[in-house]
Length: 473
Image (cartoon, rainbow, N blue to C red; front, side, top):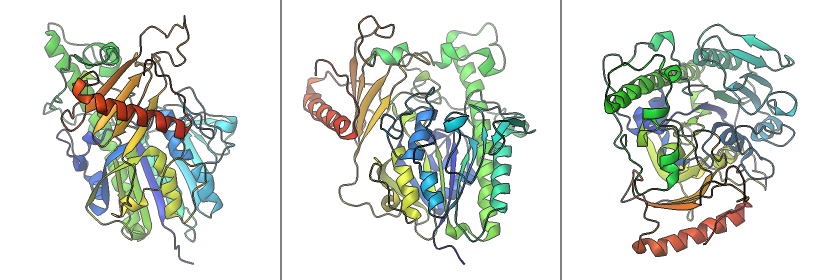
């Protein structure tokens, strides 16, 4: 019996910034196979992450809930998902979909933290390795098995093997999750010399001095200049370089290895798309490519993510489904990672649970955004000073403005080791300041905007059930 519901192939990488994809206008690399998805479907230009760190983003995608919400609760890298709770894979599995999770899980291991809702899974322990990685397979009792080769290629091989052995009478839901291009940016031998013949352009904000910004920007410890290590760069810095030349040298080492890792992901996507064509099921398959969050590619002089600034907040999202999505379309409507689970269920013909906090993206993917579509989003990063000295913060992004509150210690506990800074606000006018270089929070001309956005931020926190820690507001 022929499937009447689409297969769903969800491909997600780790830390892949949208501005390192040709279809998003990259000037530093080319991604022809990712572009095939965009050219054959839709590119979302305003897809955002609600908590820009790997583990919480993955939990939000699975649960359709914000990090703080009951039913999710994964707020930091140390959190583990509770597999006893509902998730989108369980819903699809219960509706007759074959389900599989292959690659980077990063939501804990053992007991209730193992993947649930999947007929098959084979996942990396923790971050995993690029070369000769270990995997933990369903039914193995937690035993780790080493696979020889390059991790991105192995994840693609496993995905193709599972797809080839599926029950063709039922639709499938496959989550193919790549480790790449996550730090430590170890490329495959195939691409070890890619970009050796050129310099990668430095971003416009590469030499940001963090003036007129909250202290959080200047205090962070993820700068290209001072915080990339010889291990990250795979060699010591040459002697005799000026500080400016050393920073540029480090950037070239970092960005080239990062982009080499991306190239293998693009190859893997191409192999999956080719397989769909060869099987004759491309028209019956919703293909989505995204990343668990954005990443700083030298923007503001940084690597990593976590901040609510655009390069970290923004997720790539391209989708292809010939039976419903117009080829070559571009959508500027706002989308969030909390919307992914209801989107999967909508395409599968399943009603979303009442507790879901996201909304199906199907209308905007198919060019039919309803009146009143979301035009603002809530963000919160919880891990105060834990990694890279990034301050905990929450905020509101609209289609024009961004309001950020760095609330220092989450509970404001007197004497806390984290309670070392006073809370601060930032406001950016994205129309006039797309690179977020000028904090206008204290500009009298924006007083009305500040009041309106602050009220909306607190309204959304109350609506979503999150706590707030504002002072003097």
